[in-house]
Image (cartoon, rainbow, N blue to C red):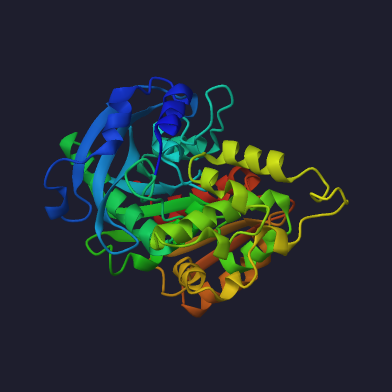
Length: 401
């Protein structure tokens, strides 16, 4: 999906990322399709440091997983191990960190960036790295999957719950294999945390843990402001310029499931002319393009107003078979989660509108569920204000012992 210009941009914004780094993502060792899911294919130590990740050793890995369409794929991740400290008798538990929306282009792969999110070195956003660093210093081995198609060949299957869940579980398997190669013992007990798209991915992996994750023992799941009930969120986003970038990525997520999908069946007249660029730009650049091209507080004819759904979403999109199938594939709350589940949600966040529906679904499945509402907190700020609850939850459900 990525073109040369996008890859070149990745080199420019990523300190130390040259041809050798990018080559890590482009191909897998011969015979990889014959390997079981979760197989570690290759790894490389990453010596670039970032303050939030102090005290950890980082490794870029590639591993086998199963994609949205059922075929085996190879995916990438970062793995962080505590650089010091006693390894507990039962081995270090592994915690997976599932990232939020970063884009759908190859340059959007978080593992390419020392701060674990695709932004220029001049303005790095490291709130995900802060969580990873805190988890690693608690004594966990932390794996940070990129998800299918991010950095590696093929389209990113944006918000496809099962693909993200499998990427997470197989990332845990691969991280354990890496630790073994480094003579660090790990436990079969594991946990997962994620934000936004990653919160949805974390919930999906918890629901797959008893079947796809056999051989491992999931103890704790933390979902921070999870991106759920996407049909509802799409309708809200259509009339809010701040939501348009997500609609663009959703369109590409649909196309990842059907290469013949016509964007005009989903995108309205304001979004359609620039939708191809959603497949090339990581989040901040795509956000800037959407705002610059389409939002000045007036309609194209010069009349004042706010965007209407018909400007950004195609008429009848809700009944298009490809859209319907995609939205079904993004759902969570369809099976009982393994282990304990903690959901953290800020009140000043669009996803507060779907919070009650999510909680009702998880309770209906019989999940071992806790949920905390964070008054006055927006989408990203749930990370900072929710950390104390997440830390206590992991200490209780997945102690390092």
